[in-house]
Length: 140
Image (cartoon, rainbow, N blue to C red):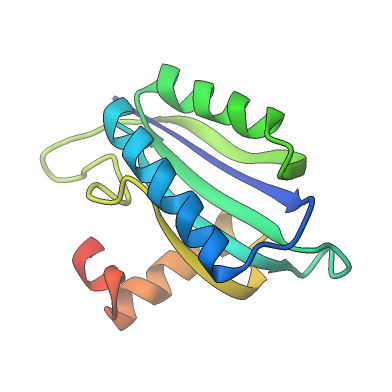
């Protein structure tokens, strides 16, 4: 059984595209060892337009590993106002894989307006997969 968690947070300082990419590279290596996959979105949060930036992240993997990572994120000084939007186990079957991003130990997207709800995140994922461009083509 796969455990998933979606959170959003406010960045304590703005990050450049290069800084986000470096964060993703380091996280991807660590996540691969822990069996974690997911997607990090960074950009502006429409509900906090004055913030230096915001994160929305989907994390999936073994429950203990996901919970440990979320605890680390909550303690990370780059984040404030960390809020879990959704979490829980997802059953895996031969017809329905449990992971949304089975081959992404961590990927990222930079956005102007980040989704602020589970429904908004799911809509974003559906739209990107339908477009099938870039890394999304491989994730479909």
